[in-house]
Image (cartoon, rainbow, N blue to C red; front, side, top):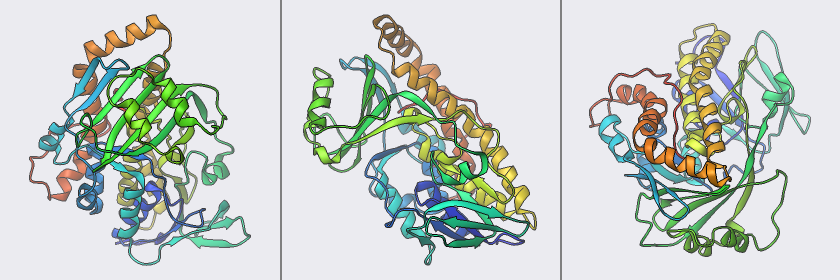
Length: 415
């Protein structure tokens, strides 16, 4: 149960990380209040690749069963050239036996809704545009764009890579553009080459295409290409993508043709170097606000879920010193997330190569190492950490995972 001087906890941001933090804190006896800038609490329709460590976190929050009723479990993560030539195949289905939970894909809005519905009481306030805060020895006062304020014992900034809470503490963030843009979309379709549990990441010259099913008859995809930031799409973006991927192997053209143009979203891909400081006093950060991880290893949402559980754990044991608990949370999570930020950035650069000679080097490297060293490193560096919650829940029938160092080193992973 929450004790001491931290009971009412304000959370700026109502995305996956903010809602997960609210749920984890509520389950520990705290009184969270989520402050969402939008007038309506909703999240986008893009897909999420949730590795086993993320599913174990969802299980610990008590929502995994509901997610798994919808989200397809993956048996093999495939990697190929744009021509359809195999570069690697990871047996991610084996994680069920080793850790007690699968790797899945799920629509972001579905996961968002499940987390929202799991919260007890009226703990989400929409239309709450946080612009700054003031803190003292007893608590934090959050300021909103409309001139009103809200008082709490602690403040958690879960408001994303461009979050106001982080910038209010440390000044404008030094985000860095990756050099590539992601187009994301959804296709309602059944396809012989997309059986349940599909995942395929295809690598081309300066561009990539990834697709996976997120529910029966619903496929999420992402097209990535090098380019300058700040651009906007004109009508005809689907035709542009079809031209870009003309001649690509597999069901790429069929997926694009089945996607309504209004379901295609464009976004510049940004990241940030790991930062040494996440908080001050009674304020800290969570998720992309603290450690934006590019999509290249599929760990962004997973790490936000882990953040939520670790934060709640430290605060529950804080006694009368919640400020020290925040610093312990930050130290633990910085050690975990910094390597993932770095490896995701490096894999993104590898995927973006356009020079024909470098493409041959990339393909030779993947054929030699992806199924062996890369897969082993991804499991150790990304998945094994989640076994801390598998052992605690006691709900899994599979044997417990082998004892491994929680803060594993960085490793190549998947998109």
